[in-house]
Length: 316
Image 1: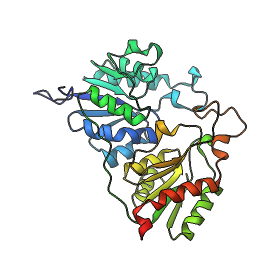
Image 2 (image 1 turned 30 degrees about the vertical axis):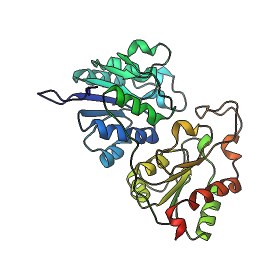
Image 3 (image 1 turned 45 degrees about the vertical axis):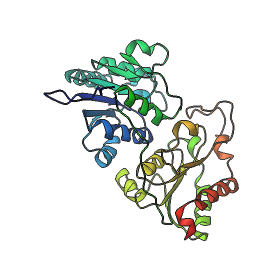
Image 4 (image 1 turned 180 degrees about the vertical axis):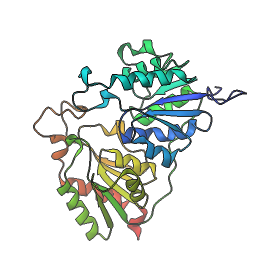
């Protein structure tokens, strides 16, 4: 198939990529952005925090910063609170551009409505209920439910091949642990991570323990780049570590690992305890999220020790 991103004689095609959610979501999109930026002028519509990632991983991509009101965790549909002027200004500015295509890897009608409002010639995405009417090219969902597989399907629709990133083997014994996550359903608990850190140090690993107050995103990337292994919750830092080539071990709660585990050949994880409502999009029905709080240190350490035993550092 001829690539839709093959440049014309006069200029490169313009591609609008929509990813309006968290740091981890943007991290999963980075390999796609890097690839298509080789053939097209790419703009990413994303939250302002994506700027640091763009500058670090794919500086040739332009960021269009926008915090969509429907990405708020609470009161997202109190329409009187929406920044309507900002939204209309965004749409007006998008329509001034001559987009060749717009894409989204999320089956989200709100993304599709934005792409339609931007006036693009070709909008590609995964339909959800009636949003098929908003797409010029409605894509079939891949066999794998993982978000990266969705980006691979988008790439294929553009006539491109998006391989799984290749990583370099890390042989040291420096483990970075990040205890933070945005929502309680993703927070295993500082005390649990502290106990894991203690056991790692007793096993002669150097451990750096981070939390949400450990610095900005630039500092986080710098610290993660020094790691040989990463341990953390189902949150953005794990995806950033994998993007930097660091093997990851993730504690999952309400989310399904098959959809959002970090992309690394040595990635491993603990699945959250069973729950009838999983995945609940972090809106827990109970007083506390048992899916992650019921995971014990002993069970985690057993799985973690097996993972570490297969690392090159274990032979040292």
